[in-house]
Length: 73
Image (cartoon, rainbow, N blue to C red):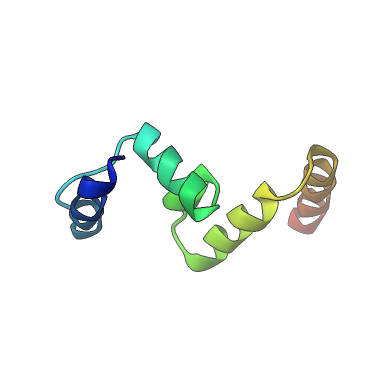
């Protein structure tokens, strides 16, 4: 995103005048150091979980999945 137009574009996204495509969302996520799915969370708890899970390695994610399945039972 060109620096000279970034502020205006972000304002349009924030106001709902335009919706960023996935490539733009990916760049914004990278800049904000959040996972892409962060933008699709419906509440703050889900967003926090998305951020925490994204920082785990694959083995830890597998362990978390098993633990969550146990909680669900």
